[in-house]
Length: 120
Image 1 (cartoon, rainbow, N blue to C red):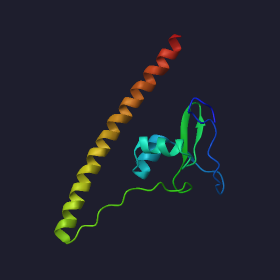
Image 2 (cartoon, rainbow, N blue to C red; image 1 turned 180 degrees about the vertical axis):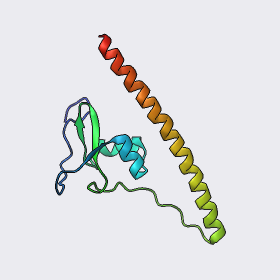
Image 3 (cartoon, rainbow, N blue to C red; image 1 turned 90 degrees about the horizontal axis):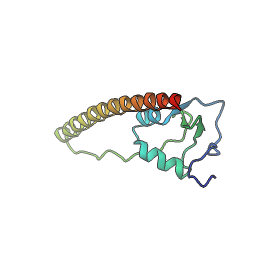
Image 4 (cartoon, helix red, strand yellow; image 1 turned 45 degrees about the vertical axis):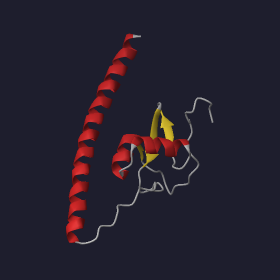
């Protein structure tokens, strides 16, 4: 493992066949996990990954071991359940809006960084 903290090889996990590798952002959205949590799991070698052209990739979740996600608290009664569901829907909507904003920022910075590389 290089001392820079970046891993250049995949964690040794076995897969049936050839898994489809997806970017961290797509995996995070698909699994409902934050990017910082994914990075911690990669650093701790808890999930398989590989690096291509400086980008971390993870196998699509059908092949990958699932990362534990905090359980949703159990609500008692229909009214309480409906309230929890409503709250979760609002949180989901907010998270989706934040993800859209972050994707826009990523695209902007990637475009900006690729333009600055051409100037060098």
